[in-house]
Length: 406
Image 1 (cartoon, rainbow, N blue to C red):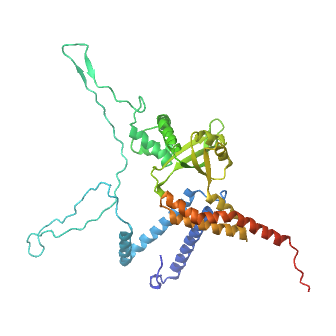
Image 2: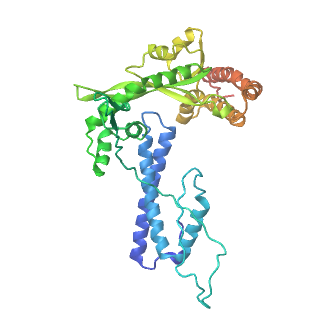
Image 3: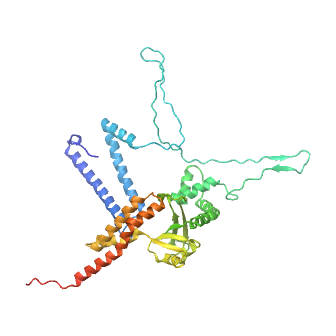
């Protein structure tokens, strides 16, 4: 935060300490900026994991917040200004959250001057976000037994409700919490076991693993139904990424592939709800998407991986390639040095991006008309323009240099 000259200390040692502290903080921030730039523009082998970048940003933000808190404690005006700023930027809390009203009232309702009764003229209302920590509870299931005094053999009792895990103790909600923590929040089972231990619940990691495995078996029909529903769409997005997989007996991991098939028509007023299905495969062979997308007919948006091409050979799938992957090659050429052809290609691709930004959210027909009128001339001229520029550059390089002599 910017300081005025009056706020600076007069002591020389204090000033030196402040300068050194600022230099260290600036060095940390500059390093974070470099990592962000490398993450955004660098090659894949040079980019850092997003989680690592976020950790660096969190550290910088925490240090800044601690410094602001210390300054606010020493300056009433600064504290009031920061409080007003937070009130302006915090927005309103979601309306669907339950409200617990707490009335903070005065102890004495008599006038401090004449002791007559005070009457209410209004109130100030403010809200704070509260959290109720997750809490275990035990569902006690009682099934009364009934007998007939006249018939000794008759005993009637309601059947026991089915359990997700026969003979196990978890409810469906407990298993769902374990699954969400593991796969959505990336919380390993052994860490979950440690968290539960703090609440006095002794659940071994192997027990949690058993719950996850059995729940996965029960969810297979849901996963298959989701994938079948997505394959009924007229267009899909497909991509794959590596996934480290434990290799029992070798003491190391092996590389598997996680394929994603997604649909999201919300940006262009589509009627179908968004969805994504993940499918694991031990390798990246072209037969994998062939098997995953068996029965799909429509447009498949992909990158340049050749494993998708056999799908197009069946004449039931049309491949739509990603402009960002095309742009990446031109960007690498332009970033390496003077490259007029690559720079011109980047400029034209940028025009396509600008057109897409303008028509995002419009109906399918409106976008089709706009692309035919504005985007198609750019794409039609892109390849011939690159070829012509390349030929011109080649002629310039091959032509003999003009002599300086008359």
